[in-house]
Length: 153
Image (cartoon, rainbow, N blue to C red; front, top):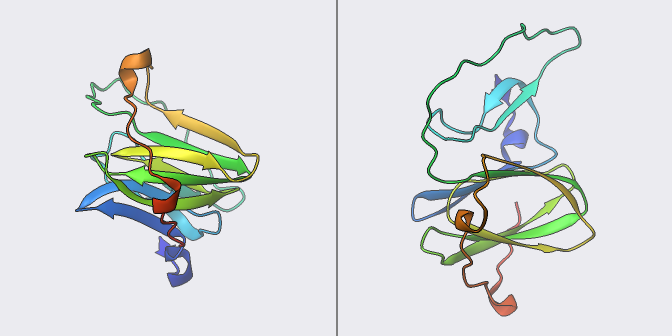
């Protein structure tokens, strides 16, 4: 797999005190072959494939494997619009914000998050289930507008 230097500019790993909070793959990312952005140990895997016409992935199915998932990770695909994501560490402290646009993908790994739609926005969300309702999340203090720090990538 070959990733160009330019393509590496389209991957944004957001960390706080060594804790990986989010991984953003911008719509302009390009690489040859297959690339996984997450380590095998993560309960949610995020990868990219670029295959030529006619390439085949052999038919397969996944075996039943016991897995322990202690936190719900989310993957959001921005179909259209623009959205600001506010990112918080596992102590619920605000870290920074990023703006996502059509074609961008974010994996929310740890800590907390909030969103403000900057335009009418369509997103697709993928997360582990089953959803257990109110017990599945807890509200945290939202960052004040005056304290928002949008980091460009």
